[in-house]
Image (cartoon, rainbow, N blue to C red):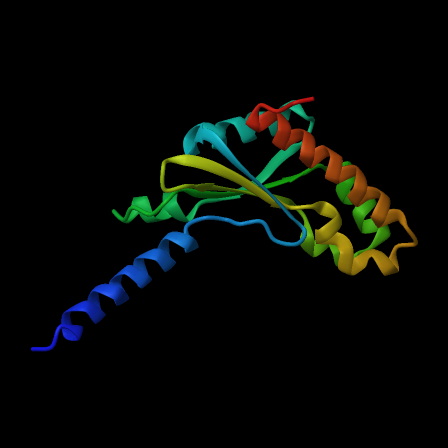
Length: 163
């Protein structure tokens, strides 16, 4: 049997595995902040949760496909989406643009890297609210800018890089 019959399947397996490894990480993209940390995934989840409270915000939603999979006896890399907001921001947002209400709460995404460390990612509030800016007379832009700072403070505190 020719050698290529053996080599081709090995190359395909390597390509599939390398593609799967790439899909396991969150990479920077327009409008996102991505912070890879040395903290374990579990430590980062706890750190983000406590940082949200310390910055005067509320953890209003959370979901985790990895926790759900674990309940079914399946192990996948850790991931958690944490929705963060506060009612005074919600009222200001809705006053500026009712349509923008679909975007609240704004979310952090915590993912587990192949080495067990965690990555913290989020779409900046300015990016999230950008489609609605034209209907708010500048109110939403000001709110989004304020929230950009709040989210950055939460992230800085969570990853230990507070100014």
